[in-house]
Length: 200
Image 1: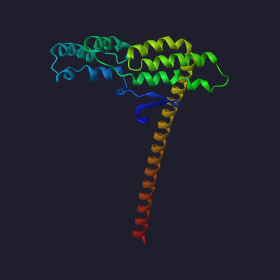
Image 2: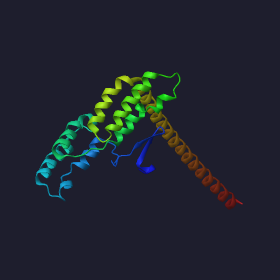
Image 3: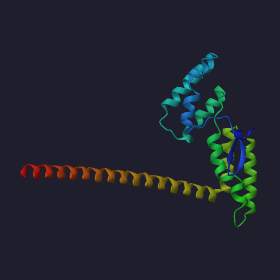
Image 4: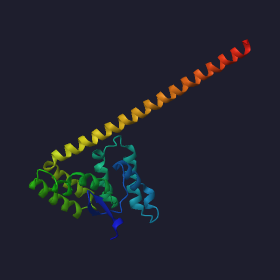
């Protein structure tokens, strides 16, 4: 494998999946369950199943991944569709990568051991989204503090980005107001100059 065939998670190389990255399960379901995907080989049965499933996907009111898992299971079982594991892999590597714990002070043997155990499971099942979700459920109790820390950091970063965007917007408004005021002052000055010129 060439170097660009790997994803790097905290300095550890993981074989990179060919999977496209999807922001949501809804987005992936819409793309992969569209009946037009089965036109080329004209698989009548799969097209009819996909048509029913696609209608369910478009009719669903929830966009939450947890609410769409049953539709994904149906797509896997009835249509043999492979679902992307990239987003889940990145999420799991965010707290199950042994590199995160081997240099930590104070050293926690159990945390390192658990991360090695689950990291191995992730690598072995990196192309199976259902298995990765099972591993995630199994691992969470061991890494709850790490997950909470990671989520707090993400929330802090989101808040900082929001504050920065608001600050930039306020600054732009201030610049626009200042520029507008300068234009008005310039207009008044030119009127005064014109009046002085007319009066003299």
